[in-house]
Image 1 (cartoon, helix red, strand yellow):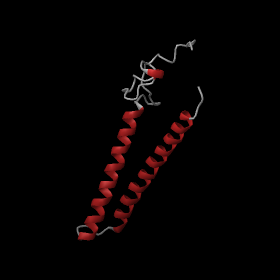
Image 2 (cartoon, helix red, strand yellow; image 1 turned 90 degrees about the horizontal axis):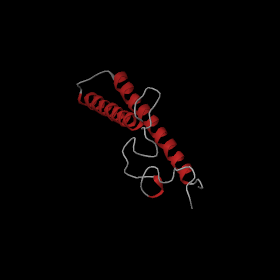
Image 3 (cartoon, rainbow, N blue to C red; image 1 turned 135 degrees about the horizontal axis):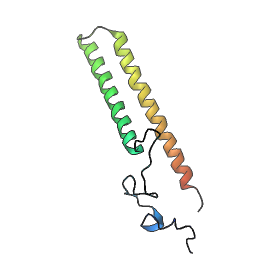
Image 4 (cartoon, rainbow, N blue to C red; image 1 turned 45 degrees about the vertical axis):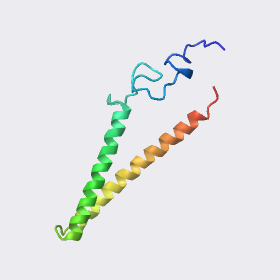
Length: 109
């Protein structure tokens, strides 16, 4: 089978896809960037770190409330809700990415 468009072996490796490719080394020459120019992988890692930070803050706030070092229940509830909302958003992005992966996986070439 010939490759009339040159896409099959363009990225190197079998089928043109390298599973351990770094950003920018996949199918195209440039990394996948968002509207603000950030690389998608870096943006995703930053958002995961932010969710982790918010969850840590909520945990510390709850521990401080229980230990008596803090007396503002509203602040603890707000920190907990922020962490929960951020986690739910990250989970929604993950689910959409998995849905897109499944859809691409089922494409016939």
